[in-house]
Image (tube, rainbow, N blue to C red):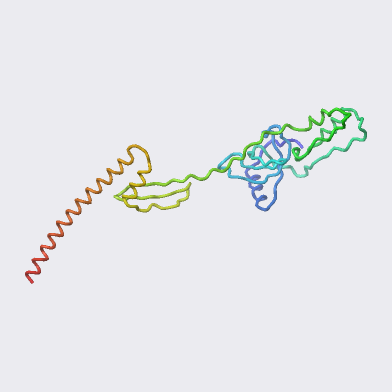
Length: 234
């Protein structure tokens, strides 16, 4: 079985996703971009989020489950199976014959297989070492990072509001908070100038409120005086 020339297409990725949902684990063959394990066969056990990492195809290869990109694997062609070499009839066969027999062996899970035990009186066959591919360095599976959380304290049109959003999801729509609460929130932010800016806004609002209160008190005094005159007239 040779290494596939191309990786997975978008349709093939979707087909694998549907197969996983149905409880199956599709077989794939490693392409040339996978390195020294090209031509070996594994099973897809999971498709992670492609937005987090390009290597979102998790393949079980031997005892390991490693992430690969769609370019590293391809769908196993139909009819392709595992071929096993016939045992040698005589232990004294020529070394050239051993090399020919070993060349047709294509194990699916090389990491699960152990090389044949050698007899003490015979040196270890160089063909066995050649048949064992170099093991690809194990890649650490990237953990999916949590979605960012944003809490916003805003001031507009004389009101302080707080909102919370995680990614594109709104957790709390802007709601009004008291100025004292806004000042306590800002006090937690140790950034020069931020607390001063909030205090200036609160001072301006306080001054405006006092002016409005004085105006209302003056208007109220006028209304009470008018009311008193009307009562005397009645």
